[in-house]
Length: 337
Image 1 (cartoon, helix red, strand yellow):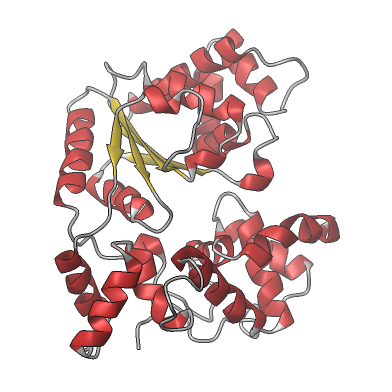
Image 2 (image 1 turned 120 degrees about the vertical axis):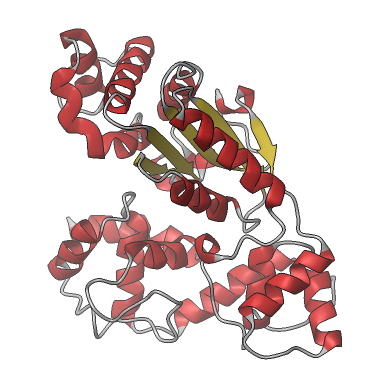
């Protein structure tokens, strides 16, 4: 049986060129010359896996993370705030005008934010931090960034050439995000049939019949996540019956429906948290009366534990992939209030 695997845990099979570009970016930033890279590709193609490769390659870097969220697209500077949370203590080191610009943008002070001043302020903040150690910014699901944040991050990405700062974005193909489409771009394409077979062999503990394997490879059409999830999403169907993404989505929805009510609520709360911080998730679960060990998801992916040390990123990955959860995030937030 093929196990369920978050995209961030997929092995990097057939990605030698992509890994090389990421490694080059990190190496140049380590030497004091910053830069940026946008990883473009369809859902499940391995962009998030490459982001995690960048994090692993950036040993000794301070890593700043953010991810776009559909339900925060109308909140100006929400993603930029998420990126800056770990370094907000450095605001005091900034000139007054820059500190005030970010405080206003993040709702910490009254006033109207000015995009150019915010851009200068975030540049000052990140380069100040990079004076202590190199900085890596990883931004996932950039197609869902709020417009103000995408402008500020693009402003930053175009101005770090002389600083030890690397920025890597993951963006859905054919998405238009203001500012990001002009940055250096790398398209993450589909796996070859041979690489797909290698990936199946790596992830499947049992040998597959050649005909079954070839059918899986054909239906997944080079998409790593589809390749590993199709067997759990209803097996084989006639090509015209439904699209591969919809079948995978249906598979997640079916698994969600089979969970206990408190498990579904826990997943929804996790999906509503933009930071992936267990220190925020567990208190929220307590406030809602969720017994985390009891609500543990059956057949968990590798890395999940019934204890409170369970990685929130695994929970958030399951939640984000479910249409049903995305539709209930706002309801849960209102209930939590």
